[in-house]
Length: 426
Image 1 (cartoon, one colour):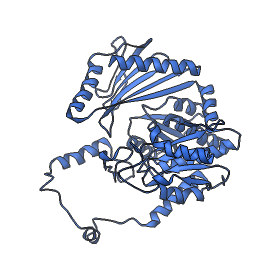
Image 2 (image 1 turned 120 degrees about the vertical axis):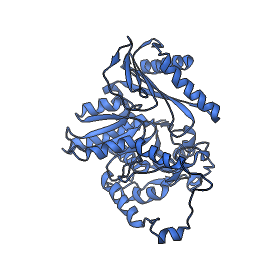
Image 3 (image 1 turned 90 degrees about the horizontal axis):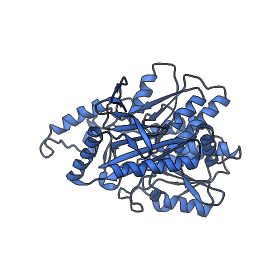
């Protein structure tokens, strides 16, 4: 799939999918890269006309019947109950999501839908935004402005290849709050498990999946409903691989997510799906609206029940070859000179996913087999942690912070303290 995904237009590239529908895993990706590196881009790249490719069976056209099957599966999963009083604003951010949204939202009962006209048309230059990423508040400005004018409860955006989804909800004072990827994930997990329990369908073998840099609140919600929570490495392909592996058992996949606005329910598609997530969020909003609750109020109740799990992400961008060297230097120093204290919290354990070794504060190597990845995670006191890893799609390092406290103010202060302290250190 040729795409810029959620990145600026200069990072246009492509994704490669495996036969089961998820993105290629690390081993398969390395095999493809090895083949590419053997080729001379000027001599060895073969070209063929589109019609000739179709005639030879090298190119297979996918027809409308596949789209219709997909629409039917989404509506069947999310439900078709009418939600006429729910006002929603949607933007495809110059991408591909609009056609699907306009087909499935009305069929699923979400008919009071308005589109951001300036961002309706597909355009690979993304002219109205600096970055077409719904994780970026700037990308959601037009949708939130239109929602404010219309009095809509939700403003929703999907990135250009429609696999990531971000949203903002209207407060009683008319202002909008952008939900984080972790908050959306927790709200949807709670919604899906609550509905399954109320219908008598919930089983202990049901399971959710999250990435290792996503909120630990997801685990707490899973425990509350007595279902299993799995943690995998960053990259939705790892969620897809686990779903495929578990198909051999009677365990049922309920929901998977990454904090970077990637969500999936159901198994008819095996990559994160922004349109499906958008529809699910609308359904959750309507479900809780019928109980006189907003999504923000539901989130607050989850905090009160499980603790204030707050998270933050810092992106440090690098450019050019010199930037790549700086990124390597930062990761090398974290491994060679372990940090012992961050703010006023002691480091209890350091997880190095490159060496796959977990080391306690006293230097003892723990008997934990870590998966392989270029990441370092510091496990701190009081259920806090910090993780540092290079981005998989852009030349930048990402720093993830997570804390848990009984009160919101304490959590906010702790999050600020460890972020300030750590960034000064590196």
